[in-house]
Length: 106
Ligand code: FES
Image (tube, rainbow, N blue to C red; front, side, top):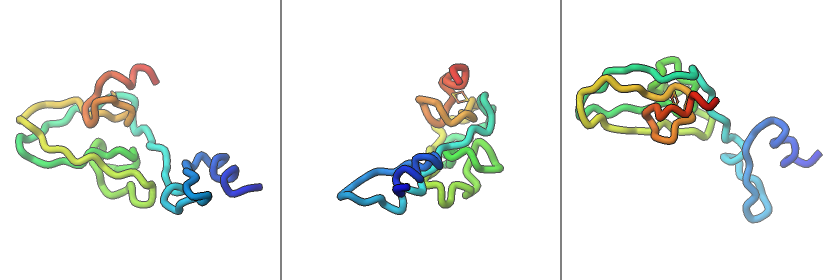
């Protein structure tokens, strides 16, 4: 079986460029969904946060470094004001890192 078909069957993303498969491309994973609702978190004005996009962090909704090897990086953002925010837990929001209600369509 060709390598591309094997990767596709394993659910691993791949791209064909110049007739080859890049190592990084083969390692791109799908995000996990730690919960199908938002996390309510206190954000502090001017503080920088790393929103977990891979869904593997044990410190949801923030990054703990568990994305290593997934090809998915956290989203860095700075809170504009002190607020109680709804931060996406399903990893499918169209307005990251905030919940936009997309979890209701999953
Ligand atoms: S929790 Fe992801 S859009 Fe609401």
